[in-house]
Image (cartoon, rainbow, N blue to C red; front, top):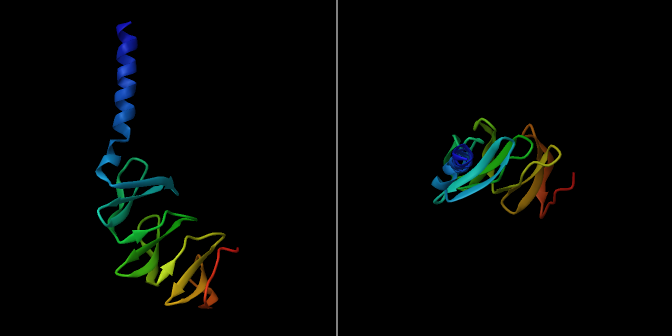
Length: 134
């Protein structure tokens, strides 16, 4: 009987311990592409499943990873990171959405267009609005 209580206590202890890292953040999103968006104060970054900080909390805004990339905002401009934290597309957009079927909606000023997952403009940024249509 002692062993059963010990095992139950151990299970509860370990299950609580495995997620204790979440308490150090104000915001923790679900894991996508192996990383979770986290926030503390007014900064965002990304952690892996174990809670290890992979991408530092240096971004003003961020979207969860989709198709291996995340849109991030720093100093008023949006760009994209890969899952290692390397800047994949330089921050030069007023707005940016997540990739969907290899394309993402971006804007410069009041105009929208689409880029592909290589960062090339595939639909010119000349339209007053845009939706995820691909």
